[in-house]
Image (cartoon, rainbow, N blue to C red; front, side, top):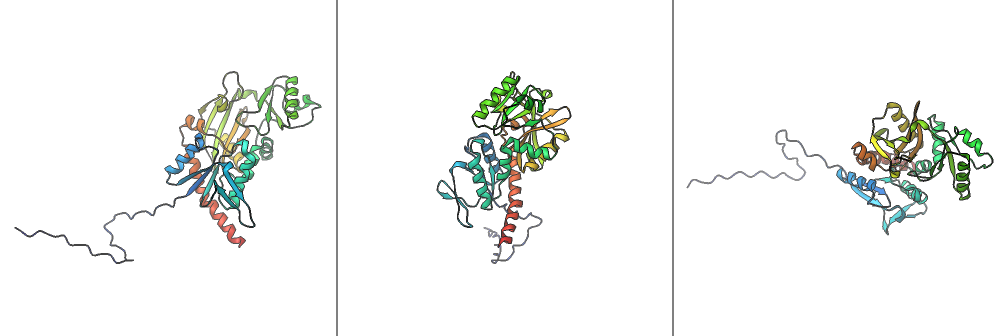
Amino acid sequence: MPPRKVKPKKAPVPPGAQAPERGDAPRPRRPRAKKTVAILSRKRSLFSTRRLVEAIKARGHRAVVFDTLRCCLMLAQGRPRMTYRGAEVKGVDVVIPRIGASITAYGLAVVNHFEMMDVPVLNPPTAIARSRDKLRALQFLARAGLDMPKTVMAHDRGDVRKLVHEVGGLPVIIKLIKGTQGVGVMIAHTLPEVQTILDTFWDLGQEIVLQEFVAESEGRDVRALVVGDTVVGAMRRKAKKGEFRSNIHRGGEGRAIVLPPDYMEAAVKAARIIGLEVAGVDMLEGRNGPRLMEINSSPGFEGLEGATGQDIAGKIVEHALVYAGTRGSALVARAGRAT
């Protein structure tokens, strides 16, 4: 029987030495550092929250959802801390806030606390607060020269006719300062209607504005979702029959559109002026171009993803990851200067 051939063993590589290269085989890439992205949301099951979690995991990062009202804030001299369900909150790289209008006050406190802990937050508390007050937001946009429907806020019940005249006459739109998803938005066709609605809200201690009715919009508006300096998706929303509010939550229908350049420019400029990294910008289609109506700091995007087929959640998460790096570096530098 012929002797069996034995393959020579490879000489072991001493510790610290580099193994010889085999041809042009590519070297293994260094694994990307996994980041922890926190989402502030009352419910993990909400569409936008669920989609953000999916997008974070799909990109190889860790997603955590904090119920905003379960965050406990601790303050001591020079040492802000936070616990969640009794456990210390640590190691968060960036926060995506989804603060509902009903918890704005506590939500802003939580967002501000993360900033005090030097954790980058995608939409800062000052910008969220600014966007929640419709009049305050419009004041900033008007000062920047953006077009919008004529708007009046007053507490004087003495001359309702004069207020209506200031916004272009009847019919007139009446809005709660802090309404959302079309709630607290009404249309009045007569002066007695206007007077009754105003008296009712004023007696309830509610702040309201009167706004011009833009007839050419015909129950339609445009929603543009801005992420960073880009419009990542847009749709035209149309109110259902017998309704003037075009919100998807009010039964409106949305269809994807390609925004003209002037609409994209207005949407991005509005988000920058208010200070939001992620914003839903609502515009009316006026005769002379876009007319800014509202800006939302926690825009839902179920309707927009359905209408456009775009991965809106993925765009938000990708921007959050980049923001975590740039903003995090700035916070480290600031801390270094402070010491």
